[in-house]
Image (cartoon, rainbow, N blue to C red; front, side, top):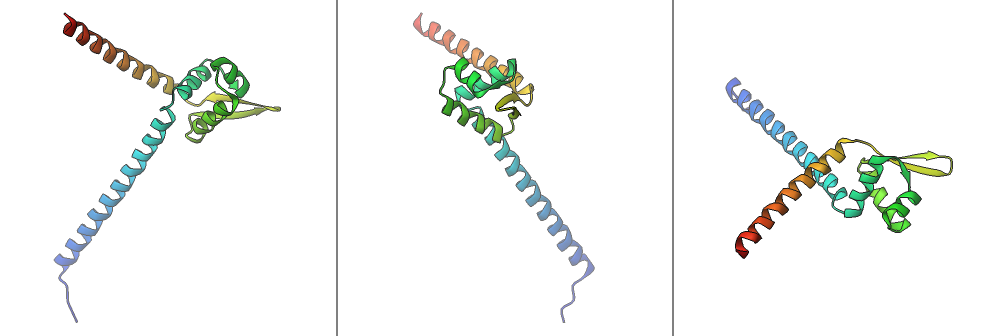
Length: 134
């Protein structure tokens, strides 16, 4: 029969506890990263961004979005499905019509911040081009 000292048992327990904590932390980090990637995927199409800005103004149905944005009904529906699956918009049935609305106004603030960063990058590149041209 093998005997293990109390000290050895404590070390094994501490190692297991640390390893489990690391695994949970790593798993959680992977899940959060996947959620961030899903959110970025939803924002990766210009039409979806335009849909979000339109829904920020007021709730709309597919037909209204199609007419306002000049994209086909099937394309609009496909984009709304992606936005809905990622929790960015919600669909509310009103009789035979489904109205879509933005779930969180902070999304527009985030998009505006990204546009500001983009504007600054474009201005920086324009300045570089002017300096090279001189």
